[in-house]
Amino acid sequence: RVTVLYDGDRPLGAEVLDFKTDTFDPGDPTALQEKTAYYRPQLDAYRRAVARLLHLDKTRISTRLAFVEADLLSDAL
Image (cartoon, helix red, strand yellow):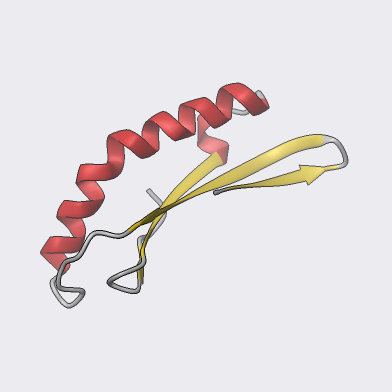
């Protein structure tokens, strides 16, 4: 999911939220770190695509992971 913040017709920033159904122990911080690291290249690709589509600098686009089975939302990557 991409949410875009606009000023009139001009995009100012965006957030990419990617939903994942991986199963892991939500109480294990190492597991969350490993899953987040695993998906980082995919989120970086999404960030580049959104930057290109919206003509935004990549620093204006945040990415997050929502692990639905573990009921966890990652910090912005």
